[in-house]
Length: 338
Image 1 (cartoon, rainbow, N blue to C red):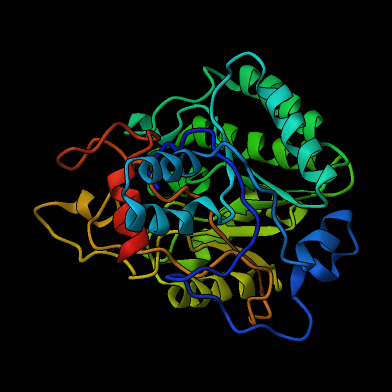
Image 2: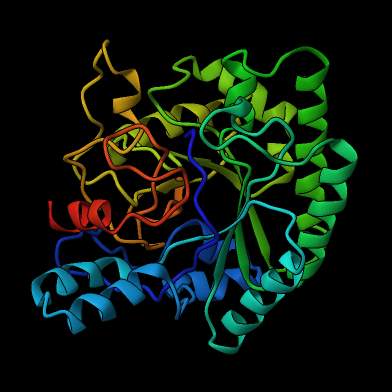
């Protein structure tokens, strides 16, 4: 992924012009049959609406400025579900998480959260940072898990954390420590009812050896989770992720998974040897992907989610691009209008 989305929110599920959705099936798969509190809301395809998301403000700004066509396009993002990222230790982070799930519960909706604070996050690249050490991470994740315990929520845990071990960026004792921390994080979130956890497993173009991916997910605790996630903040097609995820699932005894479809409507950009970053870092010509839903029509895919907020920068890797995680309305408009 190599991106740092800012703290963001999740809007109500709608199928919007310019986005596509999988054909519905008589009963939603995966989450619906879980028997958990989370299952009932997710089965209805309803996710929490964050009322003050950046795209919402952008719609108001452009409407006031007379940019009505651009404002209409931006509504495709403003009115679509997007996950809420927790990526720092700023005071009040646990209270923000508690407020999120409380508001979602009051609305009868499901909140989606992304903890992104593992030590050596992103190996010091565009989204570098994270907890200073294992002890700090344990305290942080414990506070976040306690804040959402017994709530209706979906957690997409630590994007890229497992795959960075596989690509050699994190190795030796640090890799073993990371696996231990991920196991503990899953256990913390699963300590109460209602919370469903998907451990991140990368994307089809990163580590192609599915046996290695499956083995690493097991070491990181996926068997104690509800499944794994794919394509977070990436652009690989939904079809490619279904095929890749199905192969991983076979090696995990039928584990279920979710796919980030927020920006994969046009698939990935071509890999350019002169600009490898252009394949994943704010590539031009991309588009919004399938709308978030639990009605995927795929027996192993619990949901399509917009995990990365469309319009948040992947990093200062393109002319005019702001740092990772900052709202970039021009890029959001590209995604919404392609």
